[in-house]
Length: 80
Image 1 (tube, rainbow, N blue to C red):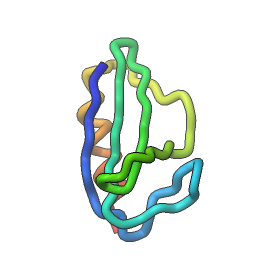
Image 2 (cartoon, rainbow, N blue to C red):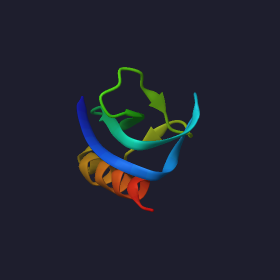
Image 3 (cartoon, one colour):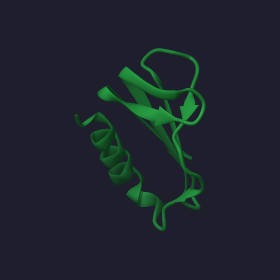
């Protein structure tokens, strides 16, 4: 199972299932297993409590695309 993490600044916020919109310095964590199942989590940078992004059942046809998808998500979540 591969885990990737990126810290970024979300000036306009990111929606979470648990607490609504969070903003500021955030950390995105994506995890992909060998079958392509993808999980997405986000937290305030340095915090212990993780939140989930809206949506369910994320899946990659090719698990080797995990890095590209992770970078794309981090970039989209950071944009103003």
